[in-house]
Amino acid sequence: MRITRFTHSCVRVEHDGGVLVVDPGTWSEPRALVGADAVLVTHEHTDHVDVLRLAGLGVPVYAPEGARLPDLAPLPVTQVRAGQRFTAAGIPVSAHGGRHAAIHEGQPDCPNLGYLIGGELYHPGDALHVPDEPVRTLLVPAQGSWLRLDEAIRFAGAVGAAAAYPIHDAQLNDRGLASVAGWFAETIPGYRHLVPGDTA
Image 1 (cartoon, rainbow, N blue to C red):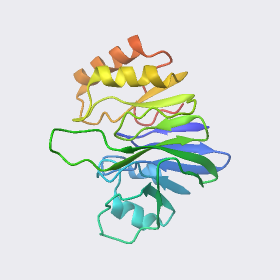
Image 2: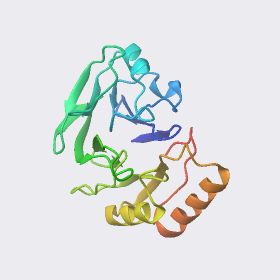
Image 3: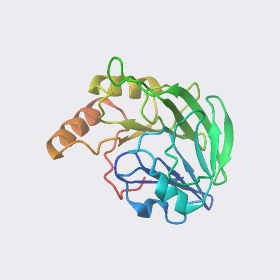
């Protein structure tokens, strides 16, 4: 399985000839979607899904049941619920979690699913739900209005993956990014910092 990181939470997964893209949002590079066979969307926020870009792509899109995607263009969306198993781009996927992490008291949350891809790679979206299946490679959120660094570190420890790479970091400046990457490298076994364009 080849993983290519793009800006913020977007990751491209290539496996056995299939290309699956997770969370191609408005901050990620359009080239992440070149040749994509299917797209997974963890939740409805625009930093994770660019509806207009996906409408023009014309491939299957999988999103959480109840997600409110902007009605800007028709999308071939398949609604997914927690616990569901399906195949996307020829790759087995299982859905975990259910809700977005709390942002601030009184702010509404939304459906959020983490996806275990190929039984190996886990993308949690904007939540810290620990799946009830083993994870070989974890994509760990690095920053967000809903996240504290110690929560991310504890989440990575609870998942216990052999490898971990950062996502959800587009709002960090270079100084903040270096600090977070330093803490992750010091505390998360198997951590390696990937910048957009790096593969693993």
